[in-house]
Image 1 (tube, chains in turn yellow, purple):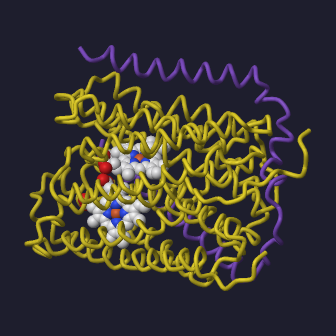
Image 2 (image 1 turned 60 degrees about the vertical axis):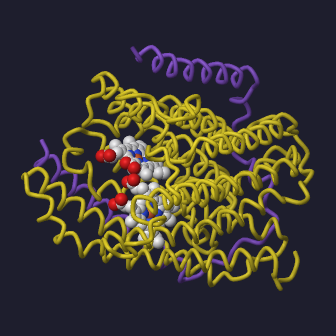
Image 3 (image 1 turned 90 degrees about the vertical axis):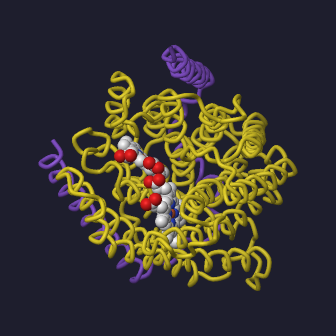
Length: 456
Length: 86
Ligand code: HEM
Ligand code: HEM
């Protein structure tokens, strides 16, 4: 049995740096989202500003969200809980800071690059080749730091969060390079259909092998702590981890069901997309049993509240995902706003909410002082929740109208006026999310740097 | 011919996972699971638990109602798609 007196890491500089990174880019991402939403309401909105027209602001929005806001938010928590669960110090805080600085440089360079028109034009793989290399190096440094921390651990057993966090960064470091075809700097692409397949292998892995495992790692760490209950079953959680690895790694082709890719690949993708129910329900049953009867306590804690809500969104996005992978259903839902609703439900509702919960959990611990304002954090929670629910409802309805029209062979231009109102609704609820991001940044900066709270 | 590359990619992922799984089994990662359940708690319970409030409970119920509505919406859409899309 290991000693009950753990050796505590001292500074948490890396976790702090990633907190700030995430909160900062969240504001930029939502601002870009608002501009994008504006174009969809009025296409000549800001018409003459080339570097933010829709074709550029959309990938800017998406890339900042994925690599600027959500991933660093989840990594901040990982840099906190890894050393604690392993009863050791982070292998190198200096390396951590270097990786965080590089991380910010690549997000910034990527955004400026896309704004200037330097894009490889493949969704989720838009970043130009030199930026891809920076991404690879940043992920590589994070992987090295985390694995070396595991290596010097004093706790022999690896808690499930460690498995998830390490797998997430390791797998992404690899699939990022493969999916971005970094051995072809000129195009960053293969030719023809193989390119679509390799792109979606990677594209889906961004959600399935980066955001999902990192999000689950944070939930598995924070929810038992907030509810003060041990995990319902650690064995079950490990079975969930391994089944996720087996099932999630090759379902990317469900993005290409209406493309002439080989049928066997589609079959693998569909079968495994449905089989995703197994790891998903394993996680949910495990975590919901862990917090069973403790909802009051969970809701009294700001981090618990965010992350528990994230688990509910996780349930929905995955059930929806499995259903969307059925060809019959996708005939209605593909190529329209339904998918955009699913995307926001997953990336913001599940992964983003979990990242915010992770930040609020660790901020008081790494600064040694209470959060600057619980009220602001509560406000942020409700704004984000209303925003996600609003996006999901509005865009799903718009998607169904579009899908129905598509099946009935209606002309596109006749459908656009019908869905206009839903675009207005999206921008309105989006405004709440954008305000929430700025409130969050203020709260994080005050907590980190100008916190009058009493030290613990 | 690009299938071999994809197959190689999928198989290599599977083989690496298998190697790590075998390492985990040999290393005793699946033993002592009872203690493993408590690992976060052993480390982190240094603060007082948050106080349960009535508003918190109402918020939780609000979320459950929202989730039920979502479930209903999902079921309705599935039925709609299967009727229309097939
Ligand atoms: C069981 C798990 C899941 C399955 C089976 C699934 C399935 C799908 C499918 C079939 C599509 C393509 C829809 C189409 O183009 O018609 C899709 C798109 C998408 N999914 Fe999921 N999903 C799952 C979980 C998630 C999660 C957890 C996230 C976020 C963390 C997520 C984020 C996205 C995003 C962002 C897209 C949009 C991709 C694009 O740009 O076209 N998904 N998903
Ligand atoms: C101010 C709030 C937001 C607004 C107004 C907004 C708006 C938009 C718009 C207009 C698009 C393009 C949709 C299209 O092409 O039809 C989009 C795509 C996307 N957004 Fe947001 N967004 C917001 C917040 C977020 C956040 C916080 C996240 C993630 C944490 C996010 C993740 C995504 C993703 C992954 C896509 C790609 C969807 C796909 O390809 O299917 N958004 N958003």
